Amino acid sequence: MTGSRLTAVDRATIAVPLAWMLALLAVPLVFVALLSVHGVADAIPPIAPLFGRTDGHWTLHATLRAFSLMAGDVLYRAAFVSALINAALTMIGCVAIGFPIALAIAQAPRSRRNGYLFLAVLPFWTSFLLRAYAWIGLIGTRPDQCRLDVAGLD
Image 1 (cartoon, rainbow, N blue to C red):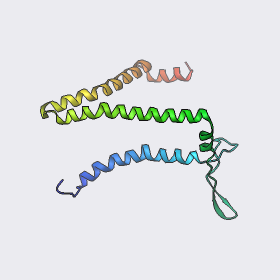
Image 2: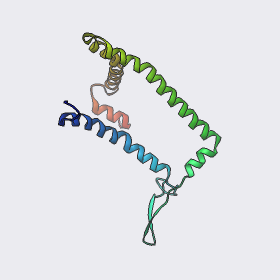
Image 3: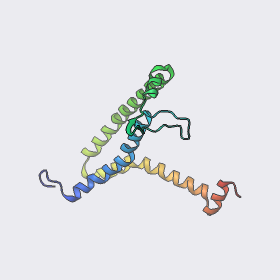
Image 4: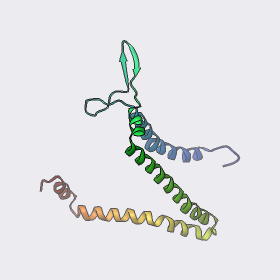
């Protein structure tokens, strides 16, 4: 990359993770936010439509009932505050542990960086391998038989 101009490869490198985050993080968050202002209906699923037509005009049927219930009930409020505190402490812990490790890897001699990065990623690979071997143990040598066992048809 020369100066401040981005090449097509640079843009693609940025675009792929950005699209991934939008698809798997932002879109579900928007859906949950919209779901929080939906009304309750006597139907399956018990969600009233957010928009409707009345007398030829579009109307918005949003309600803050869920938020007033959460703010008014001591149990909901305590659970919400507890979840926020837990999230904040987790974030602080991750930054307090991860930032020094990332800084140490970045400042390590070039010959040792890959080894340190391998040691940082190793626990995630171990978890993946354990899960893979658990599936192999569950499925066994005949995947078709496992599906029959799970379905209760054996």
